[in-house]
Image (cartoon, rainbow, N blue to C red; front, top):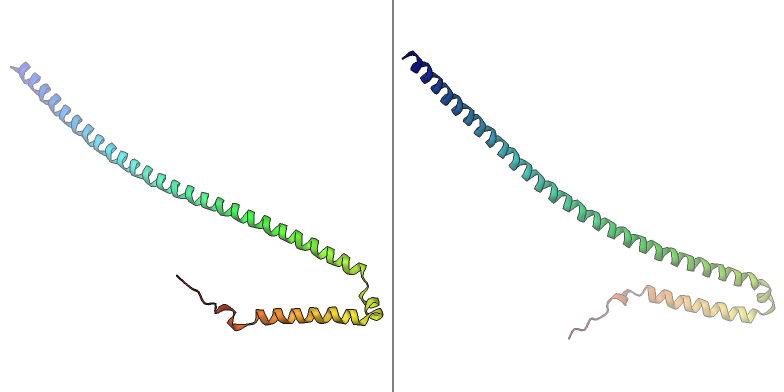
Length: 139
């Protein structure tokens, strides 16, 4: 009888211990599942953030390429303007307008008058208040 009591007590202790151990393992599994779901959610957030940053980076790179192309165009236009200015300077350096004006005042006067008239006409065209009142015809 005492042996059966001891064996019964050991049986009850092992069943109780097993129940406690299984309950503890289930709680740990539940906690790990919650952590796993949190990690999955964090990964999705990180992936979306990374894709947004990649698209922003691609947009910035595209804009940088456009800016670089525009800078190249402006540099070429500046070089052309500088070359034209140099050519004009060389042309005026070859012609002494003071001596020409003294020797042939009628020739210089005609050139100056025509240039002044052309500038006057361009000025009138630029300052015309009706220049933007173009009628748009739609069909």
